Image 1 (tube, helix red, strand yellow):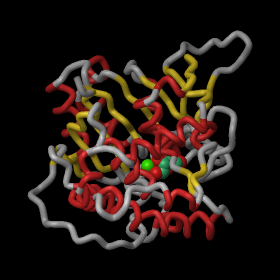
Image 2 (image 1 turned 90 degrees about the vertical axis):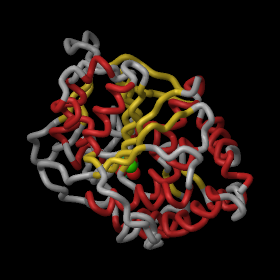
Image 3 (image 1 turned 45 degrees about the vertical axis):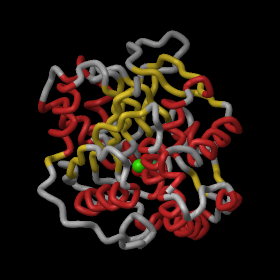
Image 4 (image 1 turned 180 degrees about the horizontal axis):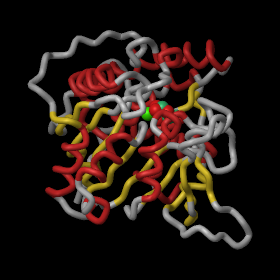
Length: 314
Ligand code: RIB
Ligand code: CA
């Protein structure tokens, strides 16, 4: 039985690769893809979700949710990394679609339709998840699991010295989710930063005969350019793809029960994730945190999974 999944994404080329993997995975039933503001503002994130789904044209289209900017406003973006449109300035044409429901309503509806069965994979700021929890307080007991890409345990941030991007963009929402009684797994930068895909990836991607191959061969060159220009790296991180792999191949990852929270007030530490790692912790454990992985096996799984699925034959 395929696992029911909601992808909450702020595409972002990183998110787009994770969507390619999830939407071609026979063991994942992607019931919804909900847009959230982050790498790009809300309207662009919503448009990008539509563009990616149209490019992939999966056999069964997921419900789509429309993003709206966080209550705190969006003070940062990743246009310097992923292009002004967030998808490498590919400017995909998007069919004008009927009015989309707000992402948080789509999340509430899909969870209510399949209580305890849905895994929410949160690959952007936690705005939608927090709004869904506030909108329907019983939801935390009905969500199967929330898998979150974000935060750091011991390592530095990436958008500030203290904070990882997804947490920083909407720290109050991140705190709502961290403090909720939902079952959570966090995949922090400490782990996802360890995977850096090189240019060799272009020899390993599916070719242009597949929708996944065509989409990724359009999106990845701008991502490599962004990483070289911004970080001087000859490779790219794929934080969201690693996070999806932790769900798809859990045997490759090590998790630990931890107690975590999010700073929402600090001038220098806004968005920092704080974990009680004292010898005798006083905070109650509230999530599983991925603390290690078999990196080479994860990279092999990414390449293998990109080259499978119904789209590869097209
Ligand atoms: O810090 C990395 C995260 O921020 C990734 O999800 C990336 O897509 C951006 O949303
Ligand atoms: Ca993301």
